[in-house]
Image (cartoon, rainbow, N blue to C red; front, top):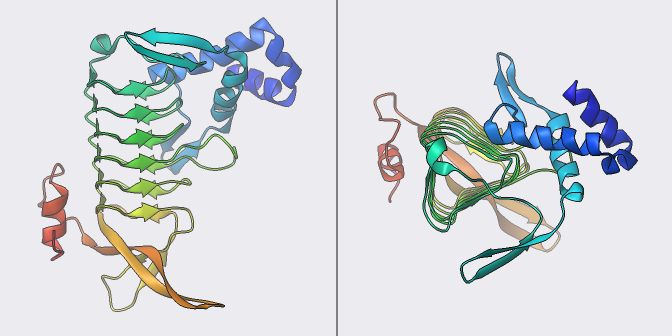
Length: 269
């Protein structure tokens, strides 16, 4: 079984020199590239992280050799091949978009000048806008819009860390940062410049009392940047947080612009 083989190589790194071991690792990368395997996948009981797949990705690096790649006047020096045959895959790729082999890019995806790293999964109908980055092993759902300059964090080490998950029909505003395994549930809207880490306070301010969440944005939430006062030895200072200011209306088209979603919640844009 492929999983058992990868786990065995992980525990006995001397096996990396073995041709059969290298073939097993490359088979995992091939299946990731085709979307047959995923680092994380939805189940009836929530998302399941496949740690052994991440291990194969980590071990892929040392078995690859550095090489020089020349494209016209450009020169690169790396050990990871890039994805190919976009026309066959039904993916639109605008120069200078780059995706590494081992990242799954579904049919109907649009890659503006951007970067998608190995192990990532980008589902159909999603746009990765200009200078957005999708980190290693990040999971991006269907019909997602990653706006200009968005940074979706990757995670290979530490291996126990969960990947960033962006579910279907999420809108991520310009220059947002989502890292450290944060999970953004379906149809949420993140306003420009929202920063979400594992320790970021996500505060729902729609009720009579604030409700704090960490590591997860509930489905259909509309989120903007905020701050709260924190006491330090040197005094009180403002610390960044994220504020849930409302819910995306059922009547709103899933492809609504960020401006429309924020206007519905009386936020100036």
